[in-house]
Image 1 (cartoon, one colour):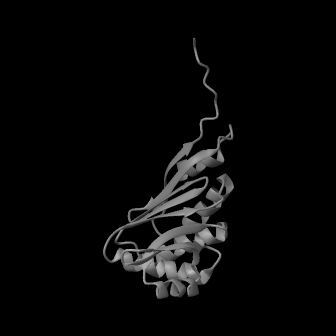
Image 2 (cartoon, rainbow, N blue to C red):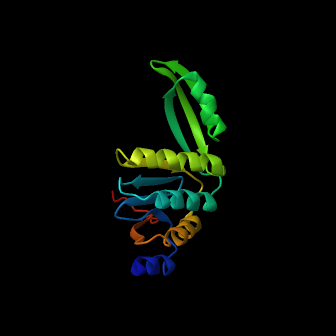
Image 3 (cartoon, rainbow, N blue to C red):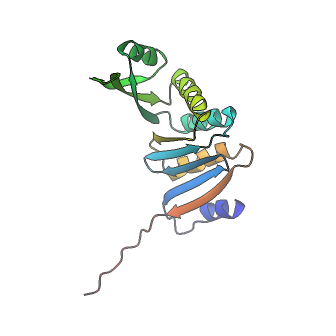
Length: 169
């Protein structure tokens, strides 16, 4: 891990990061500009789920996860009462298909979302995408926050290729 962190800090040609992968055996986080993909394995402890979500919210309060839920119409207001933001809904087989944004600036929504992830982990692995406005410095700050988690390590870093290739004719 230390050699990868040295590579970032010692990046003397100032290449931008294309993707940055970190985690541990039971969780994987891949950061890019615009999106953070998180895979939680079934053995991920609740505290790690919460720590990851809170760390992301500390770095970028505008981060959001979009979720689609099929539920009875009455349940839509229940999700809204937990801080979810209704984006759209339509009648479908089995009730209503509602699309919500889960705003990371809202601790109530984040807590409810974390509980949802933990319940799903009892049955299967969970993969989520979080949309954010992060850049290289935000990725570095997120790494600093998350490395406090036991056994956390940087797994892979890909840099953007800023060189323009010349075409031969």
